[in-house]
Amino acid sequence: MIGGRQRFTPLQRMLHWLMALCILAMLFIGVGMVSTVMPKYLTLVSIHKPLGIAILVLALIRLAVRLRYGAPSLPADLPEPMKLAAQLSHYAFYVLMIAMPLIGWGMLSAAGYPVVLFGGAHLPAILPQSDSMHTLLWNAHFYLAFVLFALILLHVAAALFHALVRRDGVFDTMAFMSAHDEGAAAE
Amino acid sequence: MAAPRRSLAHSTFGSLVLIAVVIGACAAAFAYTAGWFTPQRLTPDKLVDAFMAPGGEPLGHRRNHAKGICFTGIFEANGAASALSQAQVFTHGQYPVLGRFNLGTADPNAPDATVRVRGMGLRIATPDGQEWRSAMIDPPFFPVSTPQAFYELLLASASKDPNAMQTFAAAHPEIATFGAWAKSAPWTGSYAEERYNGLNSFVFTDGSGAEHAVRWSLLPAAQPIPVSPDDLAKRGPDFLEQEIAERVRSGALRWTLVVSLANPGDPTADPSKAWPEDRRTVEVGTLVVQQIQAEPDGPCRDINFDPTVLPAGIRTSDDPFPAARSSAYAKSYDRRTAEAKYYPRTATDAKP
Image (cartoon, rainbow over all chains, first blue to last red; front, side):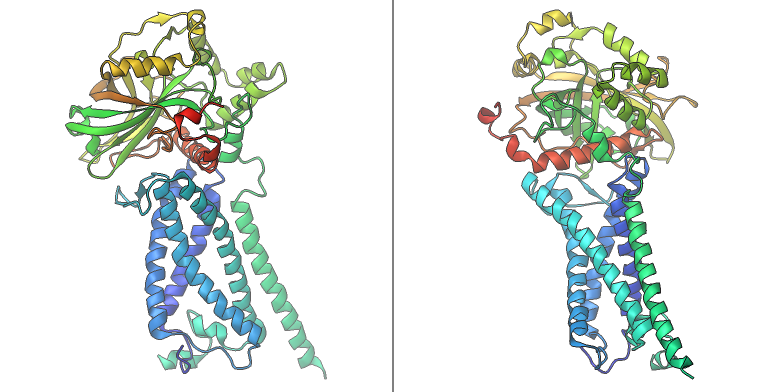
């Protein structure tokens, strides 16, 4: 981590908010599509697959950017358990953002379904067909989706806690627009 | 004055409440989307649960069309449909086929003579990496108009209320047409003599972007020979599977794939209504069944013949069934692959 920086870089902030939108949409589409037999089922599935691959690509770019630019350091007065929670949650996010699309892709491969993106473009199978592998990945995809959603709720709660209660500048490090002028001047 | 301290405390409390409200609203929206507040929503789980096999859930098997046998072969496209759809499967050539003859029952051990509806699952693969999957049955129309009605039909047939079917038929008069077919249509002694109908409408897109609403059927080359249900009942419980295996051993079997084109105003959204006989039809190719394999070790076992797996050039129409079938088939697939140990792979262990 690079300590001196006050905020995440503009590229990091753009990736964060774009992916936040994609991942939230993805989770809602996911729980919505598996609970309906209406025609919107097909529409939702046809968004879920390419959006998942888009998230995978964005997550890999984001990981590279994070490794290159790091993150602003947390406030010195932040209690250790909160610091630890913040760091662990970031690891969990990166693992899930990369693993979930791969698990989904692998699950479709293990079931022998073609992985169709837009307009007939399709991806190769990344696993051979296997009922046991399909079951394992299906369960992982299902339960980890709820883990990811819970993690997002915790993340939002923590972000708002920083912004509204502690007012320690942590929210500003990722805010789209800086609440203070110094942020704009720094760029 | 203590005002600044109090307002700070107030604003902290207010902020915490705001955070709780935001998180609670997100969680509630998620739960709503997942259907937790709408128990009347027809979910794939409910639809699949409504299939009743006499021995309970057929663990490891499809939840409907549970009894079947695999085949492989080729599809010979004659090129006639390439004017209707840009899908590669219609350009002149031969493409590998995987399929499954099956019975419309939730009971994988049903004697063959007891099941009225026979079906075929089909997967045609093309060199461009695309696939066309379809699941067809031998009635010329579907029993009901909507997936919701189909669900109610399953509930009514399983109901202990002696009037359940009557009540259902009053609300869904289209079932009478199907009932008449089931009573009067001749039975045959072979999967080879059946005509398999796609029933649902789909949309073909041709090279110019023009769209054509279609349905398709496979017409057997074999001459259907009517056999009375009483005579069929005297044959073995698996006579259809034995017969088709023997028949294919002595020579490949053929079906002609015929596409019917809707006229404007034809009911594309309702598979219980056949289109008039005079609609334009196009023979687009020949299905050649070359080999039969028992299901436990066969290549069709773990294939979901999801009718919405379509190549570019074919898409779903306003018919609501393919979506409902796709979601229910996926649920059935998820369950049976998780239960694979109850359906052993080696054919010798298969029958309990």
